[in-house]
Image 1 (cartoon, rainbow, N blue to C red):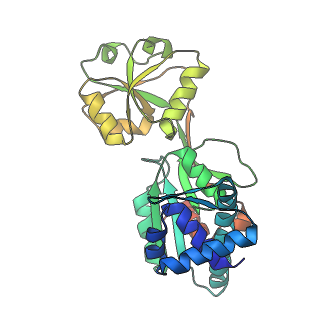
Image 2: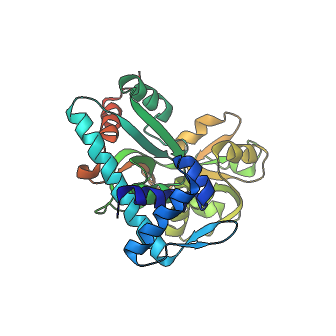
Length: 295
């Protein structure tokens, strides 16, 4: 088994297509097919189910993908570690982030990082916290900024960024806008909510808060971005329970604190692999963040 065979396998697994993977790798399709067949012979198992339109992973292929991604991540880390010893941070920084994460200004942080480490290629992907945690654990991402979704493990550790309570946003003419200085969760049991899809951190924080208080909640409108959520609330199509800092994003909406939910319901963290597996680029980015450097 050669390293390039694993690289070819991962590319086909990601693209689910031999032609597209060959174009991305800049190799011939016949050479890519031969590489996959060689890997299948070495492992004595088929890795893909091939059809005229696409390919899908077999059970053996799915098992190999987890390990292949981890191996390739370790190889990249080895190259970058040697460069770092020589005083140069290079390679690729693969970062994931949820939307509007408290405790970090992602754009400013990346701009500062690029000024200090111009030889590093930056790749950013926005996704929900659950998917980001899985990708950091599997080595597909170097680090991610997200809502805390689970306890630390052998593959994943977290560095706290910020913690804040949840706030209710509603249209200024909604009855809840005149309900008083704070609202109890039981006051919201009959409301229609606008919220993110379940994989996003704010949705998971809100779901956990209401479930912990044994208060039912109806989400009628689900979105994947902050501005769509705020637009729907602004049209009085529902209310939204969101992290407190969201209230500054739309002055036209009325914000009401939620009583009895605690001051640290929504906690954001930096998700990283174990220290020995953290890439030099990820360490350099965290150093800038810890210093508060965005200029």
